[in-house]
Image 1 (tube, helix red, strand yellow):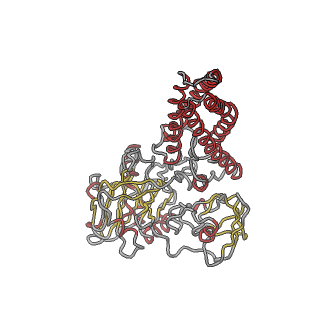
Image 2 (image 1 turned 90 degrees about the vertical axis):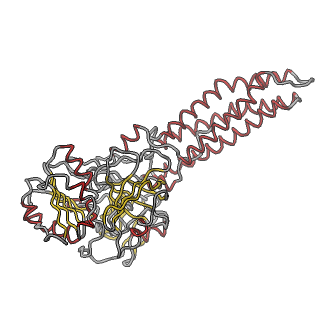
Image 3 (image 1 turned 90 degrees about the horizontal axis):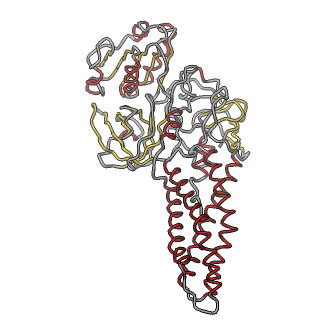
Amino acid sequence: MPTSTPDRPEEAIRKEEQQPETPSGAGRKESRLSPRGRKLTLALHITSSVGWMGLSMSMATLALIGYLTSDPGVAKGAYYAMYVFDESTVSVISLVCGVTGVLLGRGTPWGLLRHWWVVVKWVITLAVAMIAWVYTHPLVLTAAEKAAASEGGVYRPGPEGTLLAWTVPPLFCALLFLGFVSVYKPWGRTRRGRRYAQSRAGAPAPSSGRGSGPGAGLLRVADVPVIVEAADRLAEGVVGLRLAPVSRAATEPWRAGAHIDLVLPSGKVRQYSLHGDPADGSAYQVAVLRELEGRGGSAEVHTLSVGDRIAVRGPRNHFPLVDAPAYLFVAGGIGIVPFLPMIEQAERLGTPWRLLYVGRSRASMAFLPRLERYAAQRVSVYARDLTDRPDLAAHLSASPAGTAVYCCGPDGLMRAVEELMDSACPTGSVHLERFAAATDTAVGENLPFEVELGSTGTVVSVRADQSALEALREESPGLAASCEDGLCGSCELRVLRGTPEHRDHVLSPTERGRTDVMYPCVSRAHGGRVVVDL
């Protein structure tokens, strides 16, 4: 009996496997199968699954024929046909289906036993196989022999024929259920899967301070339908949403600094930082500022109300909280959101921290009552309608040695922090998260170059007036991307050969020399060609 219909289309598996290794090469690649090996294995798995399902339907039909007929010759033929199928063809196809299923499970990111739907598949599949070989197979042989002994008379099914008629169709229904489970994947992760996901959810590495690189926590999963459980006005022009999975399954694990993509009813995709308790797996919480001069995404978010359904992608984390002796958080406006769980984490760790919160007015600054519960020497609020601008240099200079400085907000604020770091806080480290692309980023001339697809050898030409993402979409229209400004990291590609010219805001300044990853929405290539894993 088949393990199931195919688990995922090839394109979905390809997207999940675009995970980078660490620069040293020590990181474990998600897929142990080469692109061609994966395609061949997937093709064999699909063929054997569908073929096995067809044979199972045939055997169910033959069992009913043998039970309902009174002609011993017809009954004998039906049972012997079942026996031949069971003894030869089904055995081979079941072996191929099982082996290829294991290879795909070990060679692709969804893995073996990381999801409840995979566990259910294997338990039911093994149960069906055991019943078929230990119980059904002897019944078929006995029924065939008794039908042969009835020739010349009227065939009356014995207990063997009755059991076959009532056993084989339910087994076929079990296989149809497995196909449903495989396609729709109705359950979430197992504990083992959650530990695996958490290990990729942006945990910082002591050596680099950025987890396993920009790809840490990049969970390329399908869109997850969610329902708006709450929509609250948090401040002037700011709405807070609580988004719970429609399936009521637990949310994906995340850590402070992570964000999710909101897939809005119009098709727009926008990124928003998560706040709340990462240990609460019941819902995601985001806060969204309505940008009057934006591209319409935030305005659409503000039209959502309780009961509306949208979808989310992620979480991803390019802004994890690193290990440090002290933290200084500098937030501008809605940039306060990622710092809420960071502050809670620092509190749990007992690490000293200070917050510098700058806003247009107190009415427009979300979460003020929550933050002002902390001591005044820890939280400094600068509302421009009431106070002067903060003295950034003084705040940076007052930071202890080794302080990790985090900044999220308007581009001008972050540029000011970057420019002051070397003089005012020379022993510290700076970590930035932008929600808009910098307008004055120094970039080189746009020259044409080529992108070679490592899986097929296809060479895609990128004109000087287009991005690599635009050119690649002509070859692969379903290529994942979201902000297309080099901010979110959703279009990440693994580079196999060549030197990318990084123009994104995902990589930190110390990671600009990396040659194993690129973000094709904005980045280009040195030397005329790069080879990517696509």
